[in-house]
Amino acid sequence: MQISVTRDVFKLAQVFTISRGSRTEAKVLTVEVNDNGVVGWGECVPYARYDETLDSVTAEIEALPAAFSREELYDLLPAGAARNAVDCALWDLEAKRAGKRAWELAGLPMPGPEITAYTLSLDTPENMQTQAAENAFRPLLKIKLGTPDDMPRLEAVRAGAPKSTIIVDANEGWSAETYADLAPHLVRLGVALVEQPLPAGEDDALLGMDRPVPVCADESCHDRSSLPKLKGKYDVVNIKLDKTGGLTEALRLREAALAEGYKVMVGCMVGSSLAMAPATLVAQGAMVTDLDGPLLLAEDRDQPLVFDEAGVHPPEAALWG
Image 1 (cartoon, one colour):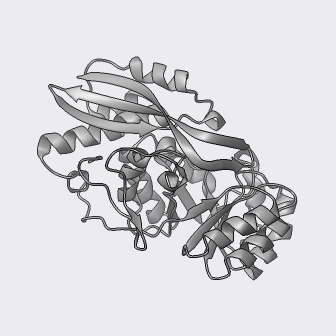
Image 2 (cartoon, rainbow, N blue to C red; image 1 turned 90 degrees about the vertical axis):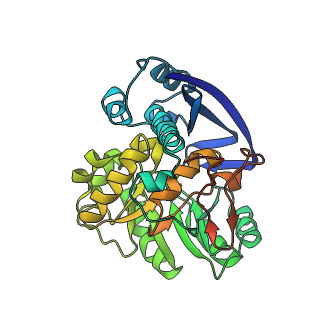
């Protein structure tokens, strides 16, 4: 079994800004697993928030042994971007070997489209209102926030898109006091969900706080080992394959989270259709699907995912799985 890693860069359609900074392109790693001419593909997005770089993740992948199974991979690499790309490539490889789709191998029903959020990046209230108005036809908008002065942004987006469902992502940017002050206004403006309002290391402050709008754990939830620390703080968990370390653990996390009474959101880093493809299987029936990465790009993979009024569709076999 031969594994190769390449770096790919996809230009973004416009500057994308969150509370931690801005970017104009998506830098990803593409993994190819070749087993006697049968090739599986996977993609990951190394994330600085988790001390990952293109170099460090490449090194992790290149240090893998020459032969291992998908189950053995779980013990060879920790949860994170490196394991994600290899795990998803192995799912693709297994599907091609078996002449079946990945969802069949996973014992899942045939997947269908899911309405996905479309993300408005952090900007001035005026520019965010313009973004919202331009995308007011979309049923679900996600707003990037995370500053002490977010109230005008919230008001502006609601004015720009009066009929869209809105979810908010603070990217760990609020204090407990800021969140408590904003919470009633989130209700007033019809916000359906707030993602990671507080830093992951400070989210004990959520214990005992009123949660009039469901609160979702993102940076606080990586894989199943995260679940015990979420009790009493969160209502929803955001499952991202770059955090879980692949589709294998993502499916297990979904099952465990639902069993413990959490709702599920399925999210993504900013990557191509290849990165989103496995996540569409996890997103089936989720409370919130946020797989808009390809919609933020100016360019994408061959055979990209289809996005239409029904949402994001599962991949064709030519792309993945």
